[in-house]
Length: 409
Image (tube, rainbow, N blue to C red; front, side, top):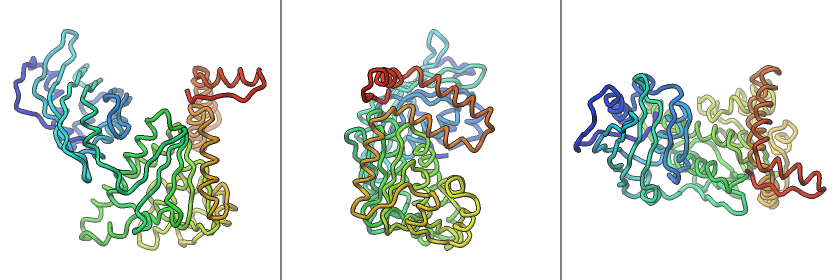
């Protein structure tokens, strides 16, 4: 598990010495050691973590559930920072909660600046398990320590976020750096309410050729399992968030989309491909299996038999074949790809973003449940949409025979 390293400092401890304090200390030790078993033992399954608004990488806010906090909260911080928390005091509050104060120290990963930021954690322990942690910290210091993007171009304007893979010398192959930066960028756009659609592209020559071959040739054979785990630890939660966030994704594809690149294409909602684009799984050619959710998304798009053929034969689909198979939405001349993709994204960004997010998730889950269960899921999403400003605006616009002005709220 990739988490923020947290260690106990040597400052004055004015805590009560109660069992609750012992549980809190176990939390810091477990996070420092990456001890999943201990975290499972001390975190209530319904644990709620609240990280300070404005934390880099989109990790700020509420994370409901122990797994969500490990993956998106502490894990999100750990993807971008090599940091530790050094508690100086643990004090008992009048309501039974514990107040932990101290400093974070470390640095941003991959060239980021030094980090030193004060913190307080207000921690609730119930029945011997942690049920809630609220963080306050100087988020400006975190932002200043965040590493710059070196393998991505990230922009946002007029409701559209653009993520452009930018390793042209390596054909946008995914290495640890790109994996970490892509995770941070997706976290950021997913957390930004101003971003209501995302364009994902690799530039005008190649989309993404998959994992960087130097991942495999640059280490000893016995190290390969660890390296592959590190990369997928970064990439897999990112693909999941890209697929489930409210803002729909438009992929603009030039050249090759292979392996992880094809997985990103399959995670998008709309795919605009150049006439010379090609699509391939590529894994079998190097003796690897699927990653990035491709063995889950691809058969849902093209059917099981066609997915089996692509994985087992390494067949390369042309853009025309990909359109026929349902893998892409539209094929256009190369010079028009970016313009058409932007037109899709701009139109989507003007829509009801929360409703689009709910529909994205319903569609992804549609093949996993029976009709009765799915109808219940639809009912919940409809009721939730009933609380939105956009539904009120949409119905009024219909009654007034005008175009609705959605705000995404």
